[in-house]
Image (tube, rainbow, N blue to C red):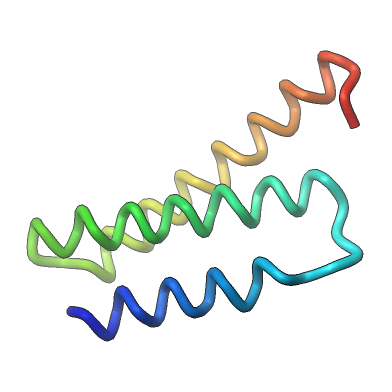
Length: 77
């Protein structure tokens, strides 16, 4: 269980350093990383950290995309 959480956090840190990404890509990546790490913690408490990370990551990517669209509608890049 600890290995899953460590792996998710390591991937999030490694991918978080990507440069040359658009604002949309950055927001979706950060949303996915936050969602996956939060989902892994909740899943760990419920007994399935991998499923929690997958569900949380998907929800985070969607949340990052929706936030990006909201920012664009307000005139922010």
